[in-house]
Each structure stands twice: as C-alpha cells, then as structure tokens.
Amino acid sequence: MTHNSTCISIPPLAHTIDDGFFDHRCIWVNGPVIVGAGPSGLSVAAALKQQGVPFVVVDRADCIASLWQHRTYDRLKLHLPKQFCQLPNFPFPEEFPAYPSKFQFISYLESYANHFDITPRFNETVQSAKYDETFGLWRVKTVSLSPKPTEVEYICRWLVVATGENSEKVVPEFEGIEEFGGHVMHACDYKSGEAYHGKRVLVVGCGNSGMEISLDLCNHDAKPSMVVRSSVHILPREILGKSTFEVAISLMKWLPLHMVDKMLLIIARLVLGNTEKYGLKRPSTGPLQLKNAAGKTPVLDIGALQKIRAGEIKVVTGIKKFRQGAVELVNGEVLEIDSVILATGYRSNVPSWLKENEFFSSDGIPKSPFPNGWKGKAGLYAVGFTRRGLSGASLDAINVAQDIAKSWKEETKQKRKSVAARHRRCISHF
Figure 1: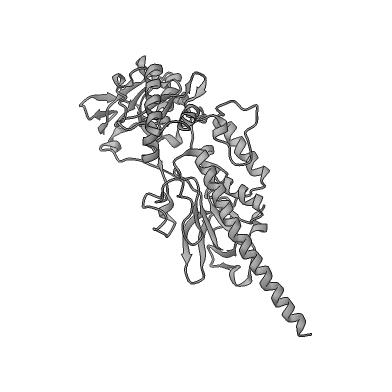
Figure 2: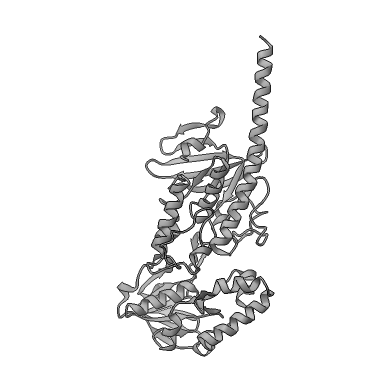
C-alpha cells in the first residue's frame, strides 16, 4: 500500500503552503499513523493490511529497521532461535540457520515489507504528536529536508507509537573524557574489530553488546578491557543442544518463575562454572524475574567467557576518570588505553515528541506493564515496548491491529449508512 492510497485528502484538511523555505502540507489519514518502520511498525502495518485498514508509516531514517541496518556491528546474530523472532504471519526461510545473522534478518524484514506491500514514508522526523480534544483527532507533525524542506501535519483518529525502546543511544558523562585524546565511540557506530588490531580498547558495559564487542575485538587481535560496574547474569546460549530460552519457556509451563530461575542458575553453574571469580557477580534476583521487573536481559554467552577465563578479555571495575591516554578506575588502578567503546545501551525518545504524559512514563515506556501496555486512551497505542523482544512486539502488534480494525470498521459502516441516508433524502426530493 503506497502512501498515496492510504492518505485520503479532504479539502479542508489537505493543502500546501510555501513560505519560501518549508512546504507546509496537511494530510487526512483514513486510518492510523504508525511512527517507526522497524520490526514493530512493520508488524502492525502487516496486521492492519490483512484487516483491510489503510495506514501511513513514517520513519526518520532512509530505510526500514534503521537500528539493524545502520547501528549494529557486523558479527551480530539473533540471540534467540528464529522461531521466537519471526514477525506475524511470515516465517523465516527454512534455509536460514537457527540464529540468523544481522544481514539475514534485514533481508527477512525487507521480504516482509515487500510481501505485505508496506511502503513507509522515509526521512520524515516526527516533531510532535498531540491529541486535539476539540475534534477528537491526533495531529502528527513531521519534518523532512530531502528533496525539499517539507513540514507535514497528519490528521488521524489513531496513533501507533512503534519507535521502540532503543531509539536513542545513551552516552554517559565521564570526568576527563575530553582530555583522553583517544578515539571514543558508542557501540552503535562499531562495525568490526578489524581496525583495532593490536590496540588497547576499553569497552564500557557488560551486556550482550559489550560481551560480543569484546569477543570480536579479541578475534581481531585487539586487547580489550571490559568495564563491569554492576552485577550481571550470564547464561549459556544453549543447554544440551536446545536454546536456553526454549528450555525456560518449557519449564515455565510447569513451574513457577522463581523455580525456573533456580534451575537455570544451577545449569549455568554446571556449564559455565563460577563466574564471580572472574569479576562477574550475579544479581540476587533470578534472570527471568529480573527481566520481568527491570527489563534487564541476561547475557547469553557465545564465547566471551572463555576469553575472560584465558585472560584475553580483562574484566575491570567502574571508571573514576579519564586522563591523557589512560583511564583511572574506582579501585585506583590506571590502565593505558588507545580507544573507548561505549556499550552503554539505548533509550526511548518518545517523550521528546509525544505530547502526552498519561500513557507513557517520563522514560518513554508505557506505564502499564506487559501484557497491558499496548493501549492508551483516545486512539493511542504502543508496540515494541514490552521488554520482551520481537515476540513481545508481535503480540502487541496483533492486539493493536485487531483493536483498531474493529473501531475502523464500525466507523466506516456508520459513515456508509450516513451517506446512504443522505442519498435517499436527495432522491425523495425529485
């Protein structure tokens, strides 16, 4: 569905003004506006397409799934088996491996968009989205600079926020970082360890990204040190040939969550050994309980732990301050380093543009926890904020599409009845 077919122009709401710099356009959308063309936005759009509901998808980037295409490292693979990562009504190709690569996943998403004929409007950054209580409609203002500066205001009944939990990088402030003099980058700009051969690299963060980047640096003969400030759960990616996630899902059918956590930690101890002696202290809360409560994902080990044991990845404490060519740690140790990679995560950017504070919290996540965080008031919806990965986003997408489709079909039916009634009155006059 192209945007020309989903945007129905109604004279009072569709016009163009040229002020000499920006073209100003106003477009009525006979359906929802979906903000975000990543897996979450595509899932909603596909589900709406199957229900026959028109829509518009807008995205600030120049492609679908820009996080995957532009802000991930080359060696990245899906952390979970493909059957737990597929989007609604479109399985992965059988020939894909159990854990598809970044490039295979991007190919899958492009095939998904093509299959459901989803054509987002790219290079449109949402400046604001506000509910107009007088008319009972959402006003979504976007700006695009190419090919000509254009400001568009979409008017719609429903707004789907699908920008996700990872739309903006988190860059902490460190004392002395401006004096360091070496190369500093966020993990979103890291592609490969090839350029770091022989370099001393400080990786700040010990989540899945920090662990995998440290491993990649090792494989390219760099010398990584990984900053571990807090406790972290490390689990084997597989247990006896089955994914740890799959094992956990099976156990949860029969056992309470805290019992499943205990079993996973016993298995992790047997398979991985005592990680605490390498400076990797486990949290007091179990991995699944911690994921549910705080959204903190356990690290699924794919080889980094072996490098830590061998001393090829050095685990260090928190940072006190940087100095010329070095970093001082909180324990007083000073490391000479050449580069810094910040694997410090991402956050939602929703508060910067959505003018609403009832459904979303100040950190840009819906206030209601899963599974009730997908629907707000006045036609506002959220997809991709479950902290449960692609499977959580897919569940939200199905719920959102069904709810919008029900309302859209009822309203369309009422409009048709109203038009038919006016038509009959006109005929009766002749």
